[in-house]
Length: 332
Image 1: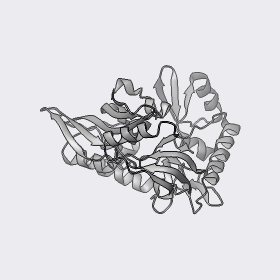
Image 2: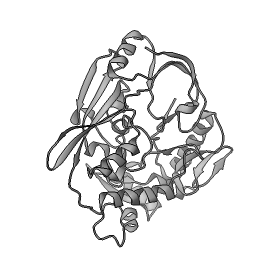
Image 3: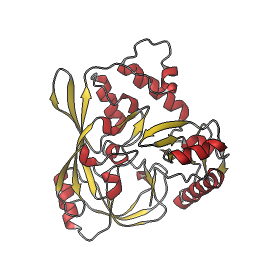
């Protein structure tokens, strides 16, 4: 077991905030991970992937586990579909690119989302009408309390909007994910932005859809190596029918999407912009000028500055519209 001590975490989170982990490890296999968990039963533990969905406001007095299992394998294949297993440490977009290059459909709308394969079920990542839960069929994991290796079916993952059993419990370290992908593809219009980008292309191919999404995201989103960020900072709010109607009285142009069970989803970016927070800056932290849903770091290594700015945005929107935005990003 390769356990390191007093490791600086700034390189391991996309906001580039400084913090020191008392203990740090990068297990290469599920077996090694089980051994580490059993060897440190009393330690507080945190699972860290590529670091795109969290940042630190203080040192971590415990054990950081950063899974290092890689590899992409075809588990089974028929004329119509394929089962792909990818290690938790695989770069997500590299995995999507691989699937598209092989003609395997189902992940193309999730192109250019930063992070690792292991994080995709945790956040139930989603974009352009597609979520991870649409293709994930099994998740291999290790229980960080016992070291037991567990296989979760899609149903057992408890997927919901940007949520899962892995996020709710923080109890399991994902070691690999199995996806069911299709060998056939027919483009269906789901999002106006994407349809506009593909205008003039009568029957878009997998590659053309992926390339269009990459163009859109590149235009809208800041490069985290230039302006450190964690992508979309807040979840899109879910509203009851009554909350929706009250908000529509204040904002007649409120975008509303039916979320089922008499619930409605609206746009956090829209609310942030309407509240006057798009493109504002407080010291070394602000919202991105081209996309109000993204908080960017202009040069601080202190995570508390980012958290304070987040609270200002939350409170401002709550005071104006009665909606409390919930962060997608984890704060430690």
